[in-house]
Image (cartoon, rainbow, N blue to C red; front, side, top):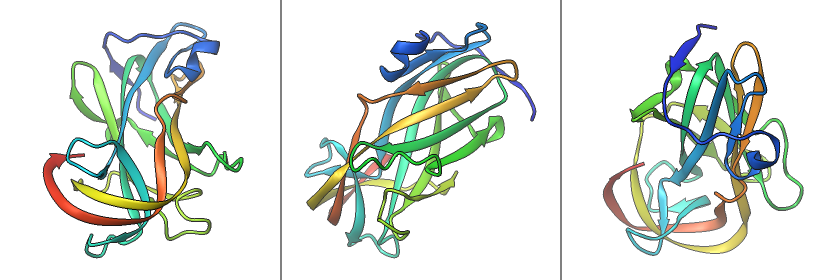
Length: 192
């Protein structure tokens, strides 16, 4: 895979602090942090928290998809990243919840920050968790929803391959609640 150089100011620490949303390669070749997790749905208002939905009414043909954007900062030499959503409930922390993104799939959003956009498809077995991840779909606008039947939550994990070392970035503190049923009440002009 083609190597790319990313220079950015990033807070990076090894081992224990990986669960706080940052990490660093043991050989010092790269470091990074997960800055935020956004979805296409906000609970209750245009400023409400981001949520994921399994069954959506009022969203056209997107009745079982939640678009997710994970924003992160990386500095150093990066071959690829493996990104995924890990469930906080019912022990659903399956390695199959992941997709690999190369340098060409990373979207720079400025100041050394990047995002990976993907669709989490709730139409697969057991709903959103586990889900099918489609990397780099066409971006959608954020919608306001009402939601019922809380199912649990997920958090992001990025595994970084620098070509000389690997390290995880795990953001347990950046979790997103998942609901079985949502209804779209408004569409905003906000990009995911």
